[in-house]
Image (cartoon, rainbow, N blue to C red; front, side):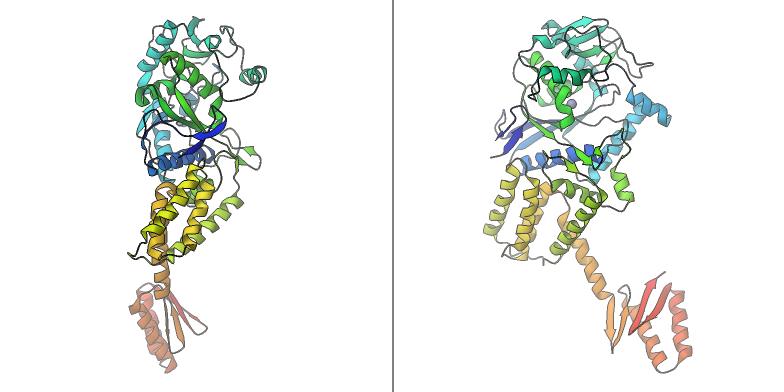
Length: 483
Ligand SMILES: [Zn+2]
């Protein structure tokens, strides 16, 4: 059985679902006014591993994700700037063009990292009526009030508000207020806006009609509304970066449970930060690392995926180029070892089952991906046929998604080509690109030179040159390459 740490209870517990065998899963999606940085993508990689582990161990999963395409939905504070509008102004595009561009960029990054696209992806702007309906319901049930033009959630109506931490209220309240101008319309310090009609933003880009006037939804209502629509009233697993635990997830719980009138989601999965040596990676700091930047520097994005898998999702992970280089070395060695396995059809089912059980045990131990990676090496060391090892690795790769077998096959072909590229005859070694016709001409030139027929040797050199081949004489032979 899957044992998973639950942020809501602060302990590792057996994963249970409302409907046996079926998981309703929700993930907080990206805000699409800029590229995702690799710290954000760490969360999506680990959530992808979680989803695939659930499917791999027999669950049927419905996974839902929002796209935050309403710019101000990134903070409780009704101040500062509209990030979507800022992005649009920066790039001279409309807000919706910006959203489309960065949504596509996000999914392109996901594809490069072998992150599966969730079953349902819903942009927030597409479900405004549902959010309005939910706010109306909360007002009706007296969990919300109208003040100063905005609708607020009344946290004093809750039995319990601080779900994810043991901090005392005063400490957290300071955090909430930090840098935020006090909103005098609020009845309680933790109350949050469900619907804005009075904004401090200038020229708000996206506005909708509502029973409270023209405005836009608060930050948290988006995820509750989208999840209720596509996951139903009982959510089994809610995922996100640890940053989202407070206040975002805390407020999601408050408004959703007040709206549906019962417990909403039992299991909360939070992925911890990716740090650099100078601290937490963020968009506002100088170090803005994207998948494209990794590629520009010659890194395979899947090496970054493996780098993430090597550590536990509940620990901070330190990114440095040196650490990534180490991961490159590990990855190449691993692929090299798999490439040395000989494909065949003598799979030993008993050994296969035993190795699979080991892998499942690692994943079911609070998604211990580092241990799951160790299981890969256990497969390579196992006393069994190469065919069994390859079959097990192909099976593991459903979850790991590192393209282990495809990369090993490419490596095998590369090795074969390198072997074919070297041809030795009578103590003369030709190193080329594996073309027998060219090798034969190079050999003829050598024979001509040996016979002191330099005119013929030069003629062959010219003939090769005409074919775009350059020969270099080296000790004990010659090298050729296409130019
Ligand atoms: Zn969310």
